[in-house]
Image (cartoon, rainbow, N blue to C red):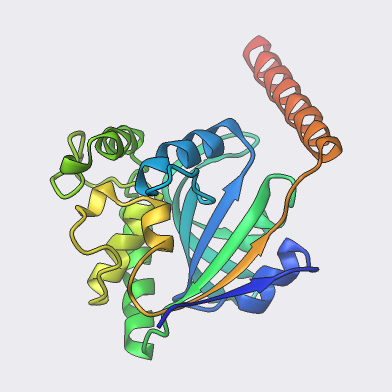
Length: 239
């Protein structure tokens, strides 16, 4: 059976540090243009055409000796001096920002110890082999969402050694003998598909709305980051 446990009154940090465990799946939704574009495209999964809450999926790795929880994910990560595009490891602290990540979920499928080992091993193998985040395959999935007959077929824009976030999670669980979305081709799997999986699990859900003041604060922060990034690039070129 599937159960949703709504959580409220706590921060993103408290939520994640409470429910993150090795082998569990994380889902996130936010307010950036990319998040909104993905959530809007996933409306085709819903019979009523409602936008999805989710734009990203990842796997919890567990707490390391540094005291931090870590995740394995396929993502586009922009840091101050470089860009990482592909399967990578990150601290869950990246999801503590409540303005960027307004909705979070942790899915517990109750994997066995052996399955957890498989999930983490396969994820780390893809990190070591530098599997790429595939924007091209993401576009292929968006096309398939508009044409449901394509969802069970190979992604039209599939590439080797690459996958986007939810396809990555689906791939790992397949290696552990768990099919999260029967009938769908692996590289056409969306975060919404994972949230709706019929595989027995418990979902811990933290959802909060942002008022206009919060949204404006977020826009200001994003503009400041963009200006700082532009200034950094300009100064780097001139030197």
